[in-house]
Length: 205
Image (cartoon, rainbow, N blue to C red; front, side):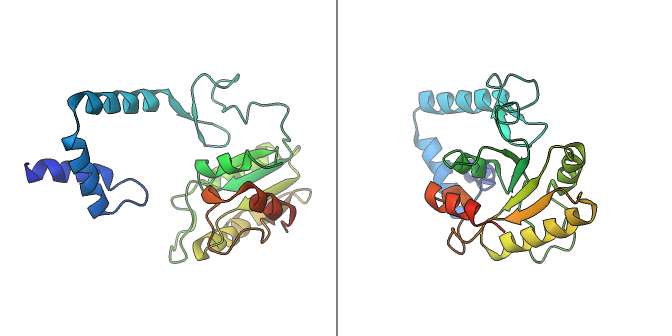
């Protein structure tokens, strides 16, 4: 097999979250070993999924076209029965899925990424500026912003940084809270069990 082919595929796979060069090459060899029908089906599924995916203009999570009753909004943001007085701010869209198995029935916002401790520009690479805009737009209905980041050094740093950014312009009627210690230190929200996450919500401060 041509090494250039392996390298081209590996460079695509290594961009996946948590995938290193060795794992990327394993994916490349796996694809090249499959029947053409499988590869074509995979390519078709990827193109179809990406074509139907859009970013919610309100919470910035990715959602599938056709499952919302309001253009541009995901099914959560367009749901009038939800509690529009609370917003849970998470690192990534996958974290929202965990909250669906809890008693929380408010809204969400996807920050996009955590803010590394060593990063000098704390706004770069995140949607925190858009979060400030959304707070301003919804200040009459908002009562609480819940910061829900992993209990890791970068997660705790992100919590502190977001507080420092939005606090100066935050109306007095809107509180900022963080998840309590229902989760284990170092835990990622994406893998949290509903009971632990529910406990963290109840213990927020």
